[in-house]
Length: 337
Image (cartoon, rainbow, N blue to C red; front, top):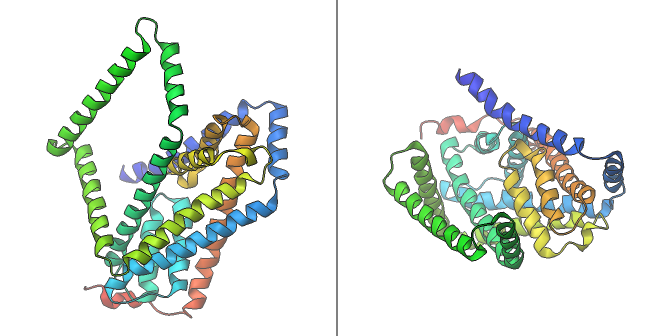
């Protein structure tokens, strides 16, 4: 039964992604399909290659940043071993959710002679730092688009309210949000429900991650690399927009909004299959981009970055063996630590 549930956890998200692809494409007319493939085939390759380059730089920076969290263990791994393990981890994530978080420390422990459990713990600080940066980006997008969000909410309430005024509905909504928040935090503090226990553990993990960053010897280098990684992420995303004429006019706020939605979409399906391009499409359509150009942009970004991860990940699988020249598993002697 457990094996069946494990298979479902992998198969259902992938099936959902495939379903979304079918659902969107079935509603496209023949002309729209032709326009979609034309936009993708005529995209300016120079900007796509620039996007891939920025993506590689972000992964290299991630490998360097990881070394700073490992240094307190008493050994600094080589850059190339860190980089190879990062790329192999990304490929593993395409196959199974979170598999990369296990594969990465396991491989580095094998070739650098470091204990797996301690290496696995170093990833907590990384995840917390990335989560905080993503939250800041989301907050900045909301701030930049307050007027649009307000107008969308006002129009929605105006169309859906017959008996009540928009002002009364907004007040009611505010009361429900505040009341719901208070109820949630009360349950979070007191409830023994497994869901709330998991949320408490998540918050505890985030706090521990923040504390580990504060106590880190090279914390400023860690923070600078974190900022660089996310600047490269946004840069590789934005570079693709200039590969198609229509999306080149999308404002910074629109690019950032699509970036946030795409980043969140990846959580639901391995590698964001189907979900990522559609999330980008739906966001860009809010900024006046046609459905075909918006969908083409989503697929261009997803395809270029996914292919880059696969190519460099597979190469890393071979190169890590060559680089270490057949070294044996040195982590065995640490198994008792």
